[in-house]
Amino acid sequence: MELFQYPYMQHALIAALVIGLAAPALGIYLVQRRLALIGDGIGHVALTGVGAGLLFQRSPVIAAVIAATLGAVAVELVRARGRTSGDLALALLFYGGIAGGVMLVGLSDATSASLNAYLFGSLITISPQDLVTIVVLGVAILVMMLALRPALFAVCHDEEYARVAGLPVRALNMLLAVAVAVTVTIAMQAVGVLLISALMVVPVATAQQVTRGFRSTMTAAMALGLFAAGAGVWVAATADTAPGASVVLLAIASFLVIAVGSALWRVLRRRATPAAAPSPEPHEVVLR
Amino acid sequence: MTPPVITVTHGVVGYDGRAVLRDVSLSVTAGEVVAVLGANGSGKSTLIRAVLGLVPLAAGSVELFGTPLRRFRQWRRIGYVPQRLGAGSGVPATVREVVASGRLARRGVLRPPGRADREAVEEALRAVGLADRAGDPVATLSGGQQQRTLIARALAGRPELLVLDEPTAGVDAASQEAFAGALSDFVAGGGTVLLVAHELGPLRPLISRAVVVHQGGIAHDGAVPEPAGHHAEPDHDHVHPHGPDEPAGLWSS
Image (cartoon, rainbow over all chains, first blue to last red; front, side, top):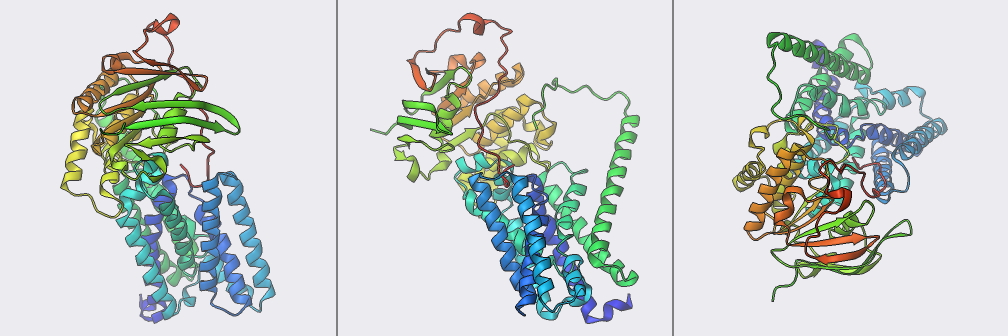
């Protein structure tokens, strides 16, 4: 544990914990909309911002925030007009973003090591100023996702109903898009743009195997995200592995443990009560 | 004199250049229970979606409670019951959580739910007979119970007007009865109802007026017509697909 006496390790740990809480709190709305991969698309666009920042010797983080926000807003506008299908719009983002990023980084003086730090995360790159940005923006995202939960739940669950209920659907959609962009960028240094989407999605997928409601899924996903981020940084520091990969592998490991565990539990419970009570009403078509 | 609850004047709706509704005029006054009837693709669902502003009018106008749709903001006065739960969400949600969405029109986006909200949700759950399933995930419910969940969501906002899109299509008999009971309580309390239906079933005694839509126009407006031909047969298959959907988008579920 003596590694955590160094300030840079403390910064990395705090940053990872904030992101571990905020990413699933946002990601649950993306999973609910079946848009689990949007974070990945926005991450690729953020990479173009990193490249522009490195090329013009400006802060890569701020350039990434701008690029990711523009990308997220563009996706939301395309979606709202219904002109392009979802996966085509995502494809444009993925490939345009990563190609732009690689090209701009190549034009700059930066080494491939600095590109790797943004792709997969690096513990030593988080400065005290970065930490302040990460904590302030991460807490802001967390507070918004929790405080607006009823409204965001309604919009993601049934958008037409939300419109008839008079909710500001367009503003809430835009808020989600911008929140994705901001979360991707603040998580970029700790987890990396290629893996941040996993921290938004995997804890939610894990939680919903054992939960029954939206609120309980959100709480459990945030707890799982916190665990994966904290433990992942510890593993990365002790075993000298890439932090993003360690965090994501731990998140996926918890998914497997809980998937197997809940399946076993269901089998055991079925054996314990062999004559299950018949369901009171015939189940006709179950609409999903 | 109070203005009509719904006024559609010379409404025209087209999808992709094809007219679905041509020159439709309709007025619903407070306390009426109006059934919009018609065959598949007649435009009956489009009519109520135009009333709610979910599809744009190409021509004509819609007024709700005397206010043009464009300027209408009192959405708390309206409860909408879609034909079914959206394409499906990836995250589980309990019946109570879905019904609680019905309070948002009244409460607004920022205010957290209070005691009045929780009481209204419990009351709506009792009204549709789902109080014992409140903590269950909606995905584990039968189609009829899911439909009752959506009705409870609309009732939880204590609206003055209920707009329902095929509330009884493909719903089991027990759920149809529970639904008719909830609706007659709502009407007895002075509520106004506009519903789209293919067949009326146990709702029939509640309906005060029927509007038949045929090929995008109104073919009949008045007394409820008697079922005729194969529609009157008890085993008539009422399961059918819906009108054209809006294009699927990236952020939509």
